[in-house]
Amino acid sequence: MLNPVRLKHRPISLKCSFGVNKNWPLGHGAHRVGGNLGPLIPTVAEARENGFDDVLWLLDDYITEMTIQNVFILWMSRYGHYELVTPPDDGTILNGVTR
Image 1: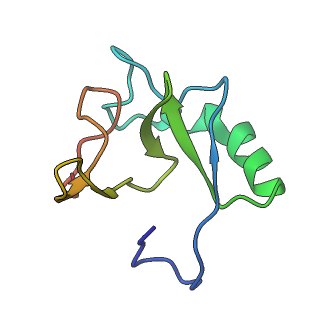
Image 2: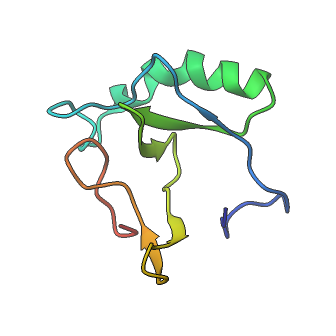
Image 3: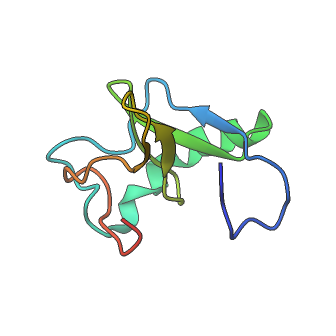
């Protein structure tokens, strides 16, 4: 995992969300609303208490985003080409300049 803004030079440890969704289709995740992060505080606090740096939010076993960071995945396709993949811009996450 690459993250140029991290001050600690170590891999980040992520907890996958289970039973709690940050966003959902036709929800408010694509909007900058103060209430988007408030309900997540208990889940993020529990992850931090257990030694994780952040939560990787899933929706139906698909990666959506992390709490306050973007997710980029670099993988090799079945055709042998490297691909840089981000979660889909389907209205469940903020669209930003990094996407």
